Structure formats: structure tokens, C-alpha cells
Image (cartoon, rainbow, N blue to C red):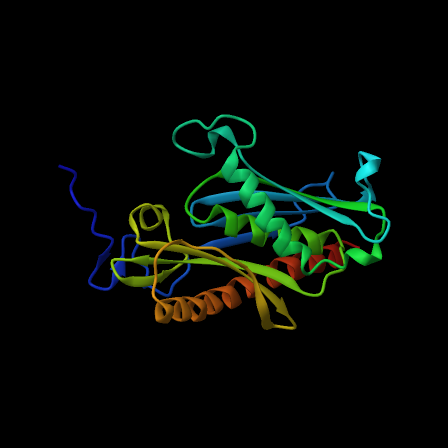
Length: 244
């Protein structure tokens, strides 16, 4: 019989965090010379790379929209990113994550400024832990800013999980695997304020009250991540100014 995993002991999680604490986050903008915009991000044990190309001519041409740019987003997990080697190429999960992530970013990109163009976003998971879709969205947002793509604001993403009846921010692998619910969020943030929810998914069950609490907890975490996104962008351009 499998021994039950205890995820919260004396109010602390397995990695020592309180329920409302994020994992350590590292963000670096402009790491790829051959991309128009790029970002490397670590969120807990997640290590992801995002690259943006465009606006550029659409290939193949028949996909072009005469009224606005098309946005393409490809989420991919490297075969070596997980403990058991993953088969290369897209699977159902990566296709689904690519779709919902693209829709979240499309809501803030000013596509109408670039008719007959494409904006291509590639995100690669180099090392996977829980919440890789949220980590990739955060990296993609910074890469879009780095590429100079006109946007209404920025997308910031974080998940909330229900673990042993307790809502926890930014779940790690064990909490994701053994928890009762997982709720990824993405928020549209403009001028330092959350304007709306751009992405909301849920795996598991929570009550209405718990969902409302999860939204507030996610907002708190998102604002902390947003500050780190801003700092990474500002740091890159301050360094460029000094070099000039």
C-alpha cells in the first residue's frame, strides 16, 4: 500500500514556503541575438526560453490576414526536460497549452497595426516542474516587450493549487501531482494595475468561495511576478544605454 504524502506540515510546504509564497524566480531579457525578442526564465525548477520573431511576412502566404497580424505560439517541452524522456514533437497537451496561451497574448497585442504580418512566439521548456505553462507565458510576455511589439499591457501568469484543503500559490511538482485542484491564471496588467483575467483554467474541484480566494491569491502573486518582469526589461535597456 502506497504511503500517503504529507504536503503541509505545521503550516509550511515541503520546500519550506508559506501558502502565499512564490518559488524563487529569475528573469533575463534579450538572451538570444538571432531573435527579435527573447527571455530566459526560471520559476522554481522550471527553466524556459522564449523567442519572438516579427512582425514579419506570413509564411505560407495564404494564412495572411489583410486586416491584422496573425499571432502564432508554440509551446514545446524538450525531450530531456522531464525525468522520463519525452517523445519529441507536439502532443495533445502542448497543442492545448499553445492554443490557450496564444489567445491570452492575442488579447493584448495590437495586431491591427501589422496587417498581412505574423508574430511568432516560440517557448521551449528546458527543465520542467509544475506550472511550466505559467512560466512560459511570463517569459513570452517579456520577449514580446523585448521585441518591441506594441501591446496594451503585459500578461503575467501564476497558478494556485488546493492542497490538503489549503489554497497554495505557485504549486511545485508534488503539490500539482497530489493536490485536489490546480488553477492556472493569466492576468492582463496595464500601468501597474490588473485590468482583467486573460486565462483561467481548472483541473479538480473547488467551491465558489475557494475560487474567489484563489483569484485574490493569484492576483497577489501576479503583481510580485510583474515587478520582476519589469525589472528584467529595465535592466536590459539600462545596460544597453551604458554600453552606448
